[in-house]
Image 1 (cartoon, each protein chain N blue to C red):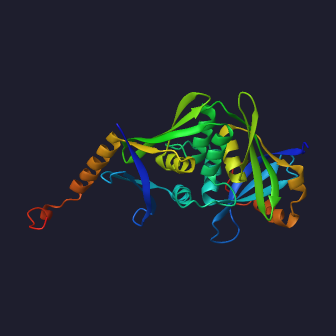
Image 2: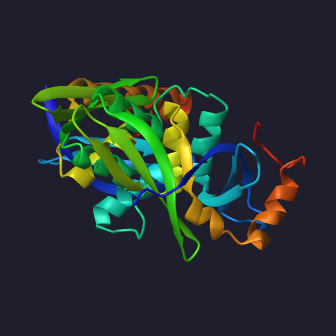
Image 3: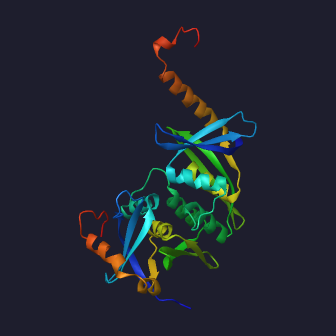
Length: 155
Length: 151
């Protein structure tokens, strides 16, 4: 079954609203800004995403740079990443790669998938099904923060 | 020349707030400490202890991508030490060709442990390491350290 996909872009990485939290929140939006998807990630993954957004090239390859370099050298092209599901507040994603002969799909946390997509200029999608299941009360606080001074990302 | 080494332990360095991976050779004559960050240290400790997480962590993903493409990690090699930074390479076999990719030793070791691939260290690195260690020791030496009977 071909599921309907909505293209998203990363709007920013914000600190979690809960004080002293070990998490960060990656804010994704579709082009019309009708849908906002907040995804909680660890600090290391949040940093990996922020560095890619800011175009920072570290002196040594970080873990996601290494994955990009591995796939590039082997001639595997990342065609897209998709946020596929949400179960008990855990989001699931898949990374789609093209090799010479076939298309490969690899299960991933959304944080790794996004960190990799930004490094390879690959599009990020979410299934319509995941968007339909987003509870507005989880999203609204982040929408308010999008314009505030705490918002660390670049639009 | 390369020496095969094994991860013998992981320590926390409270002075630098970093973690140290301890590599040792089979005969326990050579030892190489490598400073790594917290996420890389936990990636290595999970692999050492055989911990599986509910969702794939970054280095699990790295391995799955390679497995799915049928690429095999042959070995990882710590190749160089320059200004306190260690350099490593990941050696891969893919479609009958060999590939060698630049990596930080922490990522290379985290991947090697998951792929059951051997870890080698270039003998130059072991030599350079002992020299840098000696330099540091000499730098910290004070005039009053000389001439002590218990020195």
